[in-house]
Image 1 (cartoon, rainbow, N blue to C red):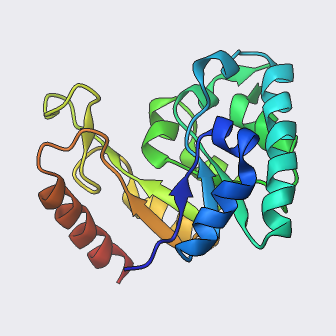
Image 2: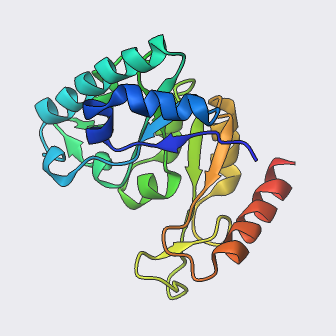
Length: 198
């Protein structure tokens, strides 16, 4: 087994970054991901999202100095358009690529109404990890988030996978927030990706 990333909430990064870095070094991991923002930091203004980007930039600089990479993981709310840009654009454009990378969650990008191919192209070279999950076909959901195993939903993987690889991602992280049978779901997703990626 190899640990290729861990999630750390923003408050932990702000309150005790040294301990987060020490833990990750101890387990042999060098990629730390902010998994989501608390709801009070999802205010739909350019200044808010730019401020989040600046905050992460400072944290990411400390991580970089320690030989770590900091990434930001999106949900659907970062796909909201604010003053002509997506919230995720305000965040990433307010931070240095050297300090803050991107962990695109492909299903949430689509759920949020944004174009995943355009985002992958725009931030090519900035994402090391990509969350791969699928959105269920109409009438086929077995959970209240309408998610599906990778390759068994509605995402266009024939277009997405080459774009992800071209953008420099090192790892696909298979995810299903509410899997009815977790082990079976991981196996189905893995088999699909193995066939598609070779």
